[in-house]
Length: 496
Image (cartoon, rainbow, N blue to C red; front, side, top):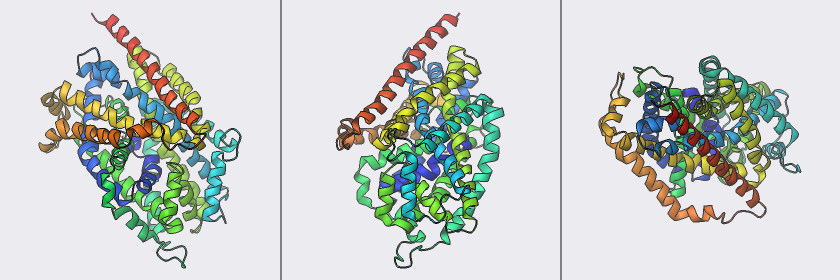
């Protein structure tokens, strides 16, 4: 589960969001969301998944139908299949960049390049100037990454995903610790601008601009990052938890998963790309890189770090390849809800389900890939990776705590637990978490919802790709809804 949570969001998405949303101003709603939404939802998803697994179901539509005996319950779980599929279509592309940059580092492609050169290299690799919107190298590494994902998913949970996490996670953790120590030895790379230093980069993260706290977009982005980084609101944790035994302790499992992820994200991830970007480019330059693409920051700043080190090409290759492993453990988890749904609800074989999900992703990923320069990837990430996750998290907490019942839900969470959650969290789970999510979402709709929906301020020529991203979401929703209806009829036919 920690391998599912720890991924590219910790090292690439998190620093970009901090840079885009006021530095330290972002961290206040971030920790509020962690305490009042992220950790409670982790317990909710693990409890729902374990409860469903004991009765032979592991996907959100099936679990919702089990906990909430209403015809609409199964359809309330659609987002638990839809959202991870949509996120996977662009996450896989970002993941393939880490594989490519690992190979480029080992080949010495970054040696001697300035920080500005690295910005240009990333743009060229992503397809700037290409008539197709993607470079041949980027597309080749994407296909290779997709093939590796298919190979791991085909092995199932124990033989594929778990083995990968057991090797990749400790290696990534140790190298990240080493790099944090080495990053702080850089100091100020340009002696003529001493204020641009790694230490002052930490100040950029931790000194809040309190005026930004009135902006609902900052709160929505913080909540979305908590869901994204912990992998809650996707339905993936439900699937993993369906494999737990009835007496397995989900209280400690949930808390340790959250804390492992937060240490990697805030302490390690927060001490790498963003402070280095500040040291090389300053506050304004860092924001510009982050605004150019949600995941760009790490691909510009980290190669600059490795050039300051002895054996930089080797260390850079190791870092990006291990980052690829972290992304791989998360991307295979994103495919699991759809695979589990097809197996449990429609009775498909594992091979057939994996093939169908992989084929869909292989086709759908061309929207964020070819439309990257027009903002299609960031559009998908906003609606699926931020708004969608907040909405589904609200639905989950409402179904579990209100429809299933607070007493039964509290007892389910503590089944087999060796530690008890403070009783105040029962109130948090039942009221604070869903009400806070509804308030953040409502405030965003009031402040920014209409402008976002109407694409106000979108650059000329980008709207066709932005609409393409939205149509991908809508089309996938319709397809999943049709499959859920089919599964409902199948279940009804099996009932005695």
